[in-house]
Structures are given as structure tokens and as C-alpha cells.
Length: 133
Picture 1 (tube, rainbow, N blue to C red):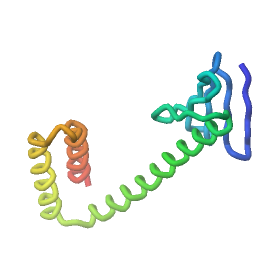
Picture 2: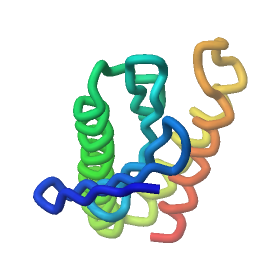
Picture 3: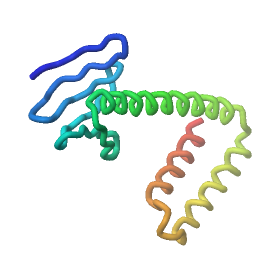
Picture 4: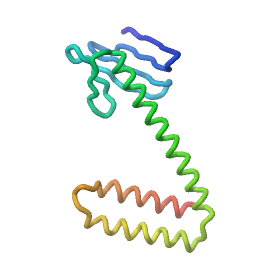
């Protein structure tokens, strides 16, 4: 097994088998690159085909860093929403919970283009967070 470390970009990749490399981005995010004939596939939630290993490596880094940044933004928004929620009155919280529960009940009649179980779970999480605040 061979490996390469590029400290400037925060990328570490190591060969984990025939035509397969594991890429670690910034020491925490891991992606896979495989070789398919003359091309390389960066597995980043889909098959992202590239004609050079470097482009596949860059795709893995871009994907991991995008998701890391998106998570940081979401965390900051959640903290701000939590602070706002803590400042609301109990009556206002109950009104918000009632609205969310009504939306959850209406999801039973949603069309097939919506992921109803996931949305219901998200609403239940929101309600639990409001009650915990």
C-alpha cells in the first residue's frame, strides 16, 4: 500500500487495493477514488468521473470542504435560532408547536414527491427542541 501526504492542501491519500484509494481531507473527511479503465471516479455521493487522478482528488477535497462549510453554517444558524427561541414566551412556543403539529398531520396527504417520514421526523425534532428550550 502506498500513500501520499500533501500538507499544503490538507490531503492524504493511500492506496487501499487494486485501483482504489482512500482520500482523507483536512484530517477528518474521507472519500474514495477508484479507477475504471482510463478514468478515475471520485465517490462523492455519486460517480464523479474524471480523466486524471488529480482532478478526482480535487473533486473529493471540494466536496468534503463544501459539506464541512455547510455544516458550520447550519450549526451557526441553529445556535442563533436557539437563542431566539429561548427569548420567546411560552404562549408563542405553544403556537409554534401547534403549527408544526398541524403541518405534520397534513403530511399524511402529501404527494409521492415528498419524503414524508423524513419530514415528519424533522418536525418531531423541531418540536422536541422547542419543548426543551
